[in-house]
Image 1 (cartoon, one colour):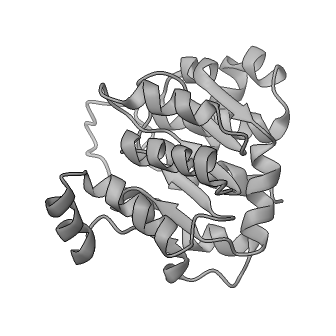
Image 2: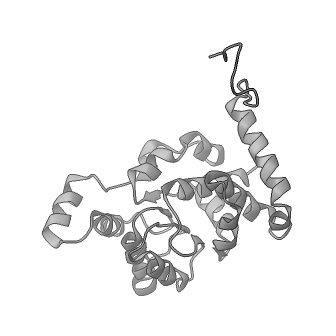
Length: 226
């Protein structure tokens, strides 16, 4: 839609395309956050920059933790078409299949697993009194998709805590855990539990997180495949 001739907002750049907006946003971040950029290897900066872009908040870079070579391990997992376990439908919907296929063309929608709306999960939650997120993590272990997988948690801290328990107690080894639940209850504790796990992981400290940030992190990892 073209602006009116007597446009009351003459500083708005109406003709910019979406890709141009993203490119200019990244250039702005690179300039304004030069000190942060210079302190990080490029693969980690790509993640920090993507999260700064998602939140419009450079301070989020100070809360990021990268443990046990997460980018390298994540790309290796993607290259062999590892399953992805998501704690929310928002994450599953947000992950770009076309981007996954840049690393491995064989990826299909069925490789992205989210059980939160499954009838058996709903029933199990009612019977046990556990959250559906916990029941989903338990199902993921039961059907064997956590081993070697990429785990993305952006909403449910108890799902992250349960998976951390599986790592610590049962020896389950995901290839990468993106641990970014958000909120005020169980969030900090679940991230602290994950920090005890000797698996590749990317975590946002404290209460911050969210499904969009978990998705942005995965997409930023894929940028390093090229």
